[in-house]
Image (cartoon, rainbow, N blue to C red):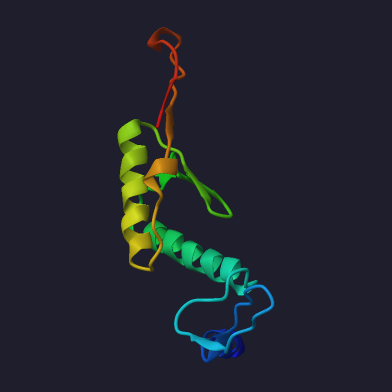
Length: 129
């Protein structure tokens, strides 16, 4: 509860001021979100993403391949592994839907997948945006 109170204090009644040249105008109320560069921002992002991931893992068994979790996360990069392109897309969609519930959005322009096969007769692996 101490952490919740600390976060609430950081988000409520926060004021800012923008210096333009030598002019320092009046302060203004920041109505939503954190100040740019606030150290609390990545912490809250990581907590939210972790909660969304745990919810997907609890609600669905799609994030498992051969009984092992197939989701690798570092900062805001998420890697999903699967036995087929269809399985990866299914897992990704489940995470996108759950993440949206918490206000997180996936940048489609930065989303990529790689298809690979262990079969030597299957041809080359391919990469698509």
